[in-house]
Image (cartoon, rainbow, N blue to C red; front, side):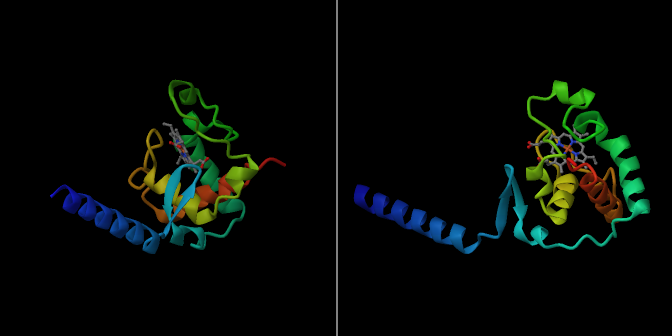
Length: 138
Ligand code: HEC
């Protein structure tokens, strides 16, 4: 009886491993699980003066309180959180694909809110991505 249980557990574990490898379509970005397709999703909003200005306005309204005016993660609300908000000026963050940033602000994670409903227009969130690019350290 016991050995049957062990064998069934082993089979279940084996199936689980095969399944996890076969379905490896998720990427880990700084602790986020992001569906792989977002790595190559093209930003439909061209980065120009207008979209960057739109993104900047939305950032000031919805993001600055935590992420800080320069995106360094030092907004007034950040001090009340037990997790880091990240540093948008960093090379590491700027290596994140546009689609991955779009996913992050759309879905949120833990203390980071989801903006799917707060900023319902997809193109507005893409405009914020364009603004986040301007925060890269010079
Ligand atoms: C209430 C505070 C708060 C607000 C408001 C907020 N964020 Fe965040 N954000 C966080 C926190 C905390 C994290 C880190 C989450 C984690 O790793 O668990 C984060 C992470 C992120 C990341 C990933 C950073 C990285 O290093 O990979 C992006 C992108 C982001 N936020 C964009 C935005 C945008 C854009 C807005 C506004 C539309 C916004 N956030 C508003 C708290 C906030």
